Amino acid sequence: MGDRLRYEQTGLSRQTASYKAIERMKTQYYAATSIDGYLADADNSLDWLLRFGDVEGVNQDYSRFVDQVGALAMGSATYEWLLEHENLLEHPENWPYETPAWVFSTRELPAVEGADIRFVRGDVAPVHADMAKAADGKNVWLVGGGELAGQFYDHGLLDEILLSVAPVTLASGAPLLPRRITEPPLKLVTVEKREDVFAVLTYEVHEPTEK
Image 1 (spheres, rainbow, N blue to C red):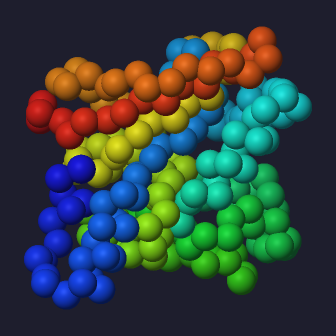
Image 2 (image 1 turned 180 degrees about the horizontal axis):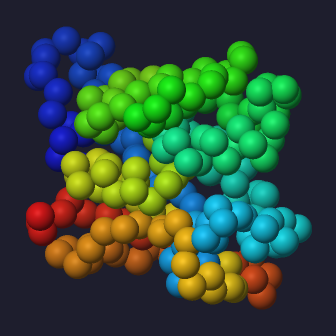
């Protein structure tokens, strides 16, 4: 995307190789959603999703995806959900990520002992540059939520949206991506099926022309 590649030009081959690695990197929003576009229900619960944890192929999809991730970002609500549901303050070994993580929050939040977490706030663009450097040619994963992913989209920093669509509707809750994306529209790249449960969709994102 445009902003991601606005680095100073250099004739040094070593730095040029580094920039080419960054150019191959993708910033991906990978999430599970209900049919009507919610990440969590009105009580911030994922019980509706966790019931499908044994669907064949889902764990393999996740493992393949994470193998290509070099850095990740999440918002405060996602981080606090992990703190609570994984009991991370008492059991920091349950922290599920090995790559460096950036947590966007306007409030002070407790850190997970031993986890590589950087707490940040404000504009996502300079943070994305740090994440791209840390990813070292691998992809950047936007874990959630939808508003944070939307901010990366606003800056032209979102390359792909990868969705596992569960066969439920929630009517309300945390929205998948609270943005109007019509010009240009997303490009559907792949459609797959996991048993009779998940539709697995990949969309390519183009830099927005609407403001």
